[in-house]
Amino acid sequence: MYRRVNLNRIVFIIMLCLIWEIIARSKIFPELLFPSLQSILSAFVQELKKGTILMQTYNSLSMIIDGMIIGDLLAILIAICAMLSKKVNECVTTLVSIMDPLPGVALLPLAILWFGTGRNSIIFIIIHSVLWPMILNTITGFKTIPKIYLEVGSNIGLKKINIISHIMIPSALPSLLTGLQVGWSRAWRALISAEMIFGATGKESGLGWYIFEKRFMMDMPGVFAGLLIIVVIGYMVETVLFEIIEKDTIKKWGMAN
Picture 1: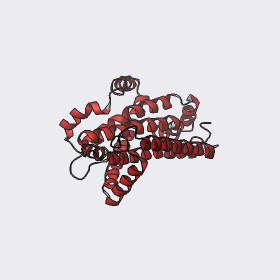
Picture 2: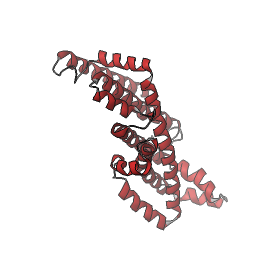
Picture 3: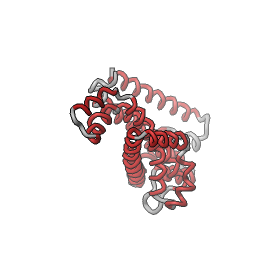
Picture 4: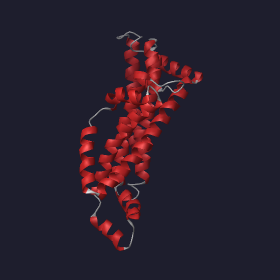
């Protein structure tokens, strides 16, 4: 079944590429606006040879990894505090309802004032994008844990820290994974958007800034080469990494069908 799904995806991608190439070769749109796959792949190979795009990809990935680690750890800590206190839970729930709908890009003016136009501002935006959906899903996961699990843990003498680490977090894993997926997708979009607005200082510019520069120079094959990398990374994380994690954890342990 898994192989059939992968085969269907490959066939669908090939069909999209063929449609793209047919439209490009038909000259319905100017080549500047709609370059062929050959020119896009040629630009992609040239950029790889230069090495600049690899460094910018590394910069983007390093920022999103740092931001997601900080955001996810904060979210789990806040969710645990919310479950231990009703008053904290009410405050956290109110805060999530206020902050979760707020796009990360909308906070860029504040981020620039607080941290300047550099790496720290972008990481701040990533943390904001990750934090609230992760808190929401973590709390939801904790609330769905059967009470008997917690009672058994208390009856056998487990301390609160052990109940949290050995019962609550493993039992809430499906919700945690959902929070990770939502946080990743929001953080990835926020990262690229923030980089396209001001990039980063020094040599720490990322993929968003690369696309902005190519657009400014009217190098459309280069723009699509950058978009290709963004799409490939997003696809690999969404449909490969998270599927592997899900298959080796919640599906293997019988927590999902």
